[in-house]
Length: 154
Length: 310
Image: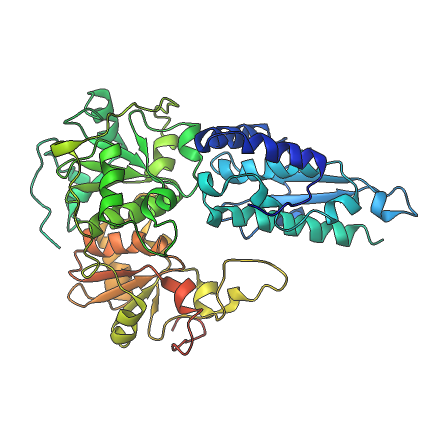
């Protein structure tokens, strides 16, 4: 990638970490993100139908987006919280979710909505996991942004 | 296809459970493979080579069958630029790097009911590798049985010089169909192995969602709808020959004597069905249309049929 893409600081840090590694080391780091993906909280566990399935991923992954109610008068400043569920037999998908969680969880609505669609291509993973598979992360990001937009309107 | 019923130096026992299949030597059981691992017959210059081929590129790294090596369908078997498989030199390099020579017994297994394992087996067949087998039930069955997994990646000395895998030109004609072949085949036997929603054309209209989809939904005219999973048991193993014949022959009216083309979305699920028709049911002329719906459904002026299976 020669284009400079503006990423939120936490996401930029992840992207820089990946950029420094060899292809094989990138896979290992992705595996660490996969293993580090937070468990679903109680209120989602066992109720995947309350979450949104990411159809762009061939493995079953579900995501949920929560947006704080405050500040009431500035929806763009409300904090965003992300939750993912993906099985251990889909480590790449879990790894993508882990990167997005690390990079986006806790940001404000405005910050999440400003993340460029091309963000998934900033982690130097094209060679290691193939561009085709990266489309799964593009789908996750696009669904997250769509939900954030919807849920910050009220 | 050549006759593959000859025994090989490394393995001679055809497992009795598979005896009813047309080419029983194409399948191995988890029990048999575990015994080979235990006996030290996996790896090494004269050993069996076990390859894990998954949809998920990281799965091998989370733990794999001891002695097995990773073969990634996308990185290792596809050309990086053109939508095609690797060429003869690249394939030879992929094989040599894994210690595989032309007469090595190769066992492939993977996730997702062996979709990508079947795909890898099919690609190896394009290059005429004689002895390549599937692990019945794939990775999921091995794991479900609580068998050993390891994160240890075997160090393989790549084969070089005279020992290297020969550069053998790929012969697509017998088992691979291109769009033009399918057009010429219209009216002949076609098997669409996608889900019923993809077959009818309903599944391609999801507004606002990016997807690796097609411009048009539906199926190739005249195709029979037989989702790939109908060939599999709950545990991912293949159904018995009798059950498979009931589906493909009796119910769908397909015949082992007819030239048949299977397709899906990108050719991986149809590799699974290609394996079933060719090696389990003994169909003589089955081609996998790997362009599948991502090509057909995006092509200008090719005929498309919509609606539920008849």
